[in-house]
Length: 274
Image 1 (cartoon, one colour):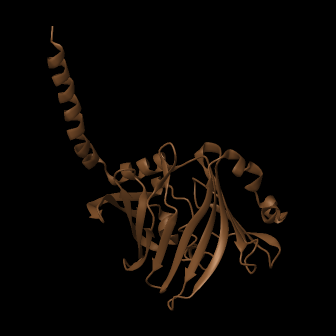
Image 2: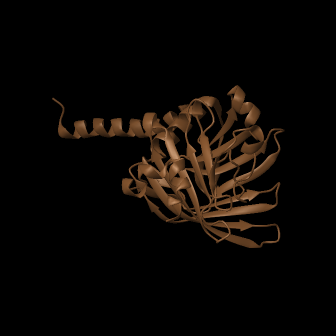
């Protein structure tokens, strides 16, 4: 029989061996595995946010907007999203409804108060490359991403401001998506400690740098393994324009995103403006 001291030494050796193996396990992750881990950790079934947007032009002039964002997990793991603008009065009531479509492009509808009607969004190439509501995010940027339609190639890891990061290059591989996308590739930067996405560099179809999305605050836990960044800056070098997004309020309660919200009929009845 082993004495207590020998048993403890063996246990300590096993623990040490496991800890030493962790970096090696991390090194074995390929780009697709990193993105799948990101998706698994940070998706929640219900989420609502109130967000302040700052639109900043080349001269530093700011335009403020306030919007609400809702997301709910639907059948077969698909998501539905609703974005509603509340302020200023010139955009009050403007809304975008998106249904994730695993077979193709998302289904999207917009409600424009000036037209007083719901309009099905076109999924043409030109539409996806248009900027959404004066921000530096295109319709492509705010569409859901089916990881089966992209390749994810791991790049050399980086350390930025003391934070260890995975770097993954995302490229569309789906034939239809390749025709529609405004990007040759995007470089995704994810923290190694919690797989939070903290930076995205966007390159156009010719491989030229367009813009950078950058986390401006530390990630916060919203329960379980899910984390969020509450302050994001998009610096659009090409357009000499910036967009800041600051989350003021967030809820992950099911009651905050009732099913009835996610229909074009809901928008047509102006229920989103109540």
